[in-house]
Length: 359
Image 1: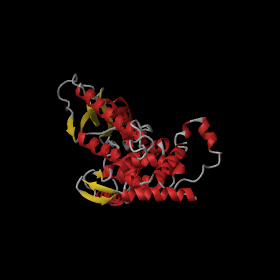
Image 2: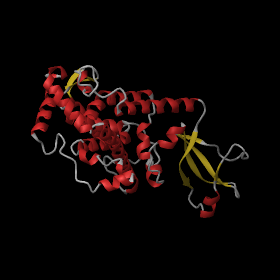
Image 3: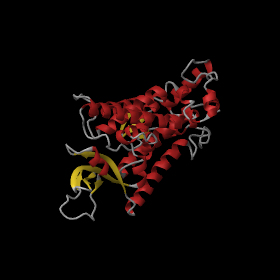
Image 4: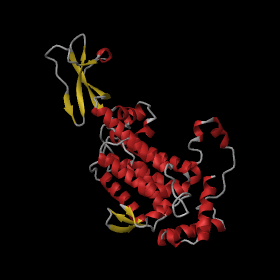
């Protein structure tokens, strides 16, 4: 997809127009660069033979005793003949587990052979929640499984991330992006847990294994897309570079397709569960941007103290002043007529408002 008036998404302090836009090394650019670097590095390591076998859970035969389970170990190539070999599963291997004393097969272990970074950072209900590996709520957002996967996610960030970053400022934009990704993981986790715990099935529940990997920036990208539709709902977007549509129509159209696929348990329903979580977070936090202020402060003592401070002044969308109303008018004018339609006075006003928000 492409923006009809590309310069609109470049609004910021250093563009050639004098307005400037997201700087060359904006937060949005850093996210794109890091995602690409992680993808390339993991691909090189995997292609060079650096493979990490990741334990995706053990299953035991009926009647296996606790003592046998305690002694169990995977079958290896050094074991004598007569023991079963690993069998292939979808995207994984099933490795027999034996009791070394009795040489009896008492279960099997599901193993995914992953690139190193993916092994450490991917998200799954079993690893992140049951295993308390909470860093995976953030890490999975920078992983991708194929060239097409990363291409379309980075394309979405390229076109819409700059617009949202200019509205929020760099620090809040990073908090916003990561929050949308976390909510995507939480949405996936809850639907996956319910799908495995409830004794009945409901549309939208994920009954796949709790160790099924979840990767990708899509949850954050959906949040950014929904936020962009709030900031500039009437901006014209070329859907698939062909069909002109308003930005809000594109954003909520993609959200509706994700919801439909999830309810129908279609292909990549788990991914769409994360997409919807990210979209819902984006819809909420772009309207309550003050909640993003302390995202990083929770990790520091000074941040805990800052919670006693009074809230900052009004944003462009809360408790409007005459100046806020003027900025909204300018943004609406950009959305409908393009950046070139602004007078010098309007450009100065928007530049001053952007700098004030950053400070």
